[in-house]
Length: 538
Image 1 (tube, rainbow, N blue to C red):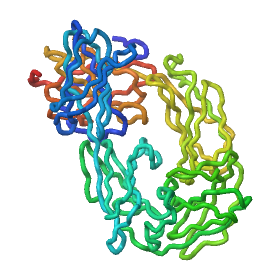
Image 2 (image 1 turned 30 degrees about the vertical axis):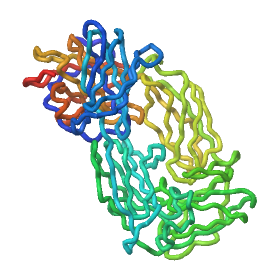
Image 3 (image 1 turned 180 degrees about the horizontal axis):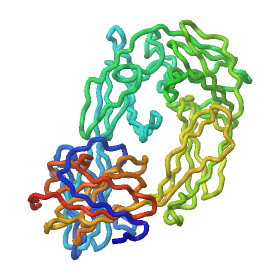
Image 4 (image 1 turned 135 degrees about the vertical axis):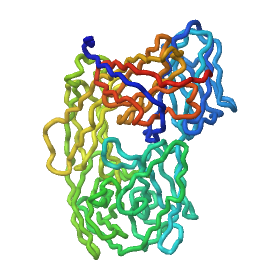
């Protein structure tokens, strides 16, 4: 039979679900689309995804779609249960949250006397360890960060907005919590590095250790550790050894009243500064505790203010970058000559295959984020309109990753391009492609069993930071299910008996799922067969 234009069909049989712990750091969203017959209340029970234990004191906020204000503001009891009575028919959104868990958002259509369901919250993980020097003494006030593995093999970047970092205590111990399941590189930063910029030059780190950062476990290059839901990884220890350290010094060609921040970053890890300093009144600078190696030297004119992660650019900034090789001895008398920044032009364009604009907005924001640590705030934003060029000026001669935000739930941007201004600036505009979301419409062959006895689970293989990784739908009375507002890409879909959700996970084993390709602005039809075997009644 010929399929309607813009649709694809996938058939598959699903076996028992297993475990996939590689969830990303975005909220898990469950869509429950029960079509029942009258309306009165919503009852539910919330359990941990990895253990099945009830989640007490979770916040449950219920909103009716299209109606302002809350319909209910509840908290789960000791058994993880909640009850919202006296509700009218219609579509509802349930927002569930609790500290140290990923938030969940549930959508359901209420048209019966009562609908009841069991929801799962994914608990965050914890890592702990100890930081010491070569004599076994604690390295107080060093900073330890857990940096998530980049999507699509992108650059490894610290992100202070997530809170996935902590300071080593006086005993040399650290503990980082609230880690969503995923893979992380764990790094310790010590001395006068950018992460300790607020205490640069203090005696917190012994001068013999110098300044720098080390990755766990081999101290040389990042290795990613898997953290599963609710897991605590212990004894992720660091031993910082004293080594030959040198000074790097020079002068910035500028008026003495101007203030510059300077950073040294290893050529192979430019996103993590080894050391940071500021110019003195005579425009001179000096880095101490620098180990042998090849570095980028970055300099930027600032307004003199700063926060804990670096300085703020001057209203008319100047920049400089150069290469410095430190080989067995101090490097002195460097001459840094600042210049004006570069300009870059961006154009937002609808993907050719997506047809009409549909749900994509006419305006959005372009964001450029530096892939190099200059010890200053380089992130920039600008407004974008479809097919209209927008130009950013006074950009540092750095490498940036470019993204588009403000597109809403039903529109997505393509791959994030890299803007390289480290050499000669490219006059060609950067095209940022956006497209309407795709969707999945499906039918589940239940073998005669009740369709509400099963949950259909959709897992994104790779997605952007703002897109949900896991979605769950309960088929309606006609065994139909829907997943809307999907980022174009590959997904895996599986079916699980609802009665067994307390013994297994929402996140499924890829080997026991069906792969589905979702295209922009198109609907993919999926026909599934539910797993055989008896299902217990709730």
